Length: 133
Image (cartoon, rainbow, N blue to C red; front, top):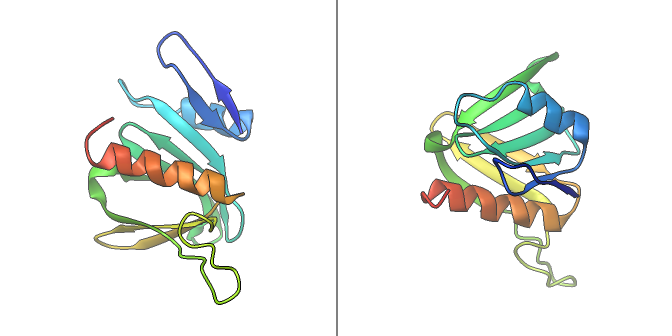
């Protein structure tokens, strides 16, 4: 994971520069990017987190068509970290690379490329949801 610092925004976490650039090109006025995470599994390409919304570049949301999907932060009802504990592993929460975001209409599952990135995304989204951002 890399970070980028600009004069307007202190730190952006991202995995791939081209994903960051794609989200940056579609920002709304006064919108700031906090992170862009490369996803694995399903049709999802990446997840961007801004101060206003989650931005998902995905092939699975709209059948076989690639699309940028936005979920406004105020539409998110819950965010959950998958519990990866088991009889032998005993690792618990935040050892999984999977997050689940629930809105009033859907449930979206995101598989990150590492539990550290999933934990960072969970903390960031939660921080934004409770109005700290």
